[in-house]
Image (cartoon, rainbow, N blue to C red; front, side, top):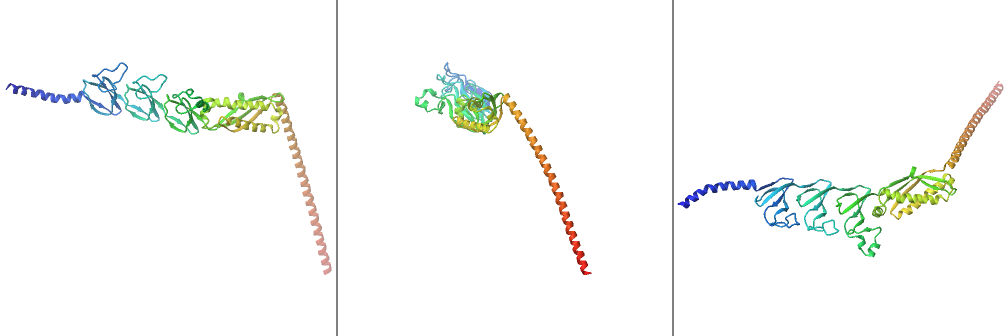
Amino acid sequence: MEKKNVIVSLVPLVLILAAICPLFWWTFCRIEVQNGEVAVLIRKTGKDLPMDQILATEPGMKGIQLDVLGEGRYFRNPYTWTWEKCPVTDIPAGSFGVLVRKFGKDLPEGEILAPSAEYKGIVKEVLGTGKHRLNPYAYDVQVYSDLRIMPGNVGVVTNLTGDDVFSGTPNDLSNQKGFIVNANQKGVLKEVLREGTHRLNPFVQSVSIVNIQSQRYEFSGEEAISFITLDGFTISLEGTVEFNISAESAPCLTHEVGDMEDIMKKLILPSVSGFARIEGSKKSATEFIVGESRQLFQNDLEKFLQKTCQVWGISVNSVLIRDIIPPQEIAEIIRNRELAEQEAKKFKQQIEQAKSATQLEEQKMLALQKKSVVAAETQKITNEIAAQQKQVEALVK
C-alpha cells in the first residue's frame, strides 16, 4: 500500500520533469548558428591543455576547440560546454586572404612559413574569394587585393623563401645569369607573369610590374648631351630615344639595373653621352651645323645604341636629334650667315620678279606687234580683193 502511495506521489514529479526537461534542453542546450556565423565551442571539463597549447586539438581536452560549428541548430550540454558566436571570414571579390595559424609547433630556425599543418605561422596557400568558416582563436586572416597586370606589362616575380642561391654547387652558380634562380630558390625567377589577375602570397613572393611597351627618353634642357668638338667648341644635343624591353629580359634588368627610370639613367643616358663625347670629338663644330654630318651622327648613334642595348634585351626603335645647340661664338656667325642667305634669297626673288615683269611687258609688246601685223595683212588682202573686183567690173562693162 505504501509502495503504491509512493508511486502515485512520484507521478506528478515525473510529469513535471517530463515537461521541464524538453524546455531546459531547448532553452539552455540549443545553439542556433545563423547565416554568416560560426560557433566556437569551449569545453569546461576534461583533460587540461599542455602549457604550450592554446587550443584543444584532441577530443576530451578542455579549452577552446579547434573545429567550429557552421550554420544550423545544435544541442550541447551546458555543464560540459559553453560557446561563442563569431562572424565568418568573408573575403570580398577581387581579394584574397593570407592565413596565419596561431597554434602548433614553433617554426624551425630561419623559416617564415609553416612547413606543415603541425606548425604555427603563415600558411603558404591563400584563401580565395568567398566565406570561410574559420576559428578566430586559431587563425588570423590578412586580406589583400588581387594583383592585376594590364596589357603591355609583365610581372617580375621574386621568391622570398626557398633554398639560398649560394647553397648550390659551383656549377649551379655558373649556369645562372645575374642570379636568376629556379622555382625552389630565393631570388628573381626567370618566368614572368603575363597580363591578367594573379593571387600570390606576399610573404612568399613579391612582384614588380614592368612596362614592356615603347618608352621615350628625352635628353633636353638640363639633361641635354654636351661634348667638345675637334676644334674645342662645346656643343649640346637635344633629342629623343624610343626603346622597349622584351618580356624575357625584364627579370634580369629589374634585378641588375632597376626600374624603368634606372634603365634610362644607367643604360640609355650613359650610352648616348659616351658615344657623343667620343664621336663628337672627331668632328669640327661647323660639321654638326651644316652639311650631312648631323644626319650621319644620328644614324651612327642609333646603330651604336641598338648594338649596345641588344645585350640587355632592349630594342632601340629610333633615335632623333631634334636640335644642335652651338656655342655663342659660332651661333652669331650662323645667325649672320642665315640673315645674309635670307637677304640673298630676297634679292633673288626681287630679281626674279623684275625678270618676270620684263618678260610680261615683252610678251605684251609682241602681242601688240603681232596684232598690228595681222591688221596690216588683213587690210592688204582686203585692198587686193577690192582691186580685183574693180578690174572684173571694168571688163564686164
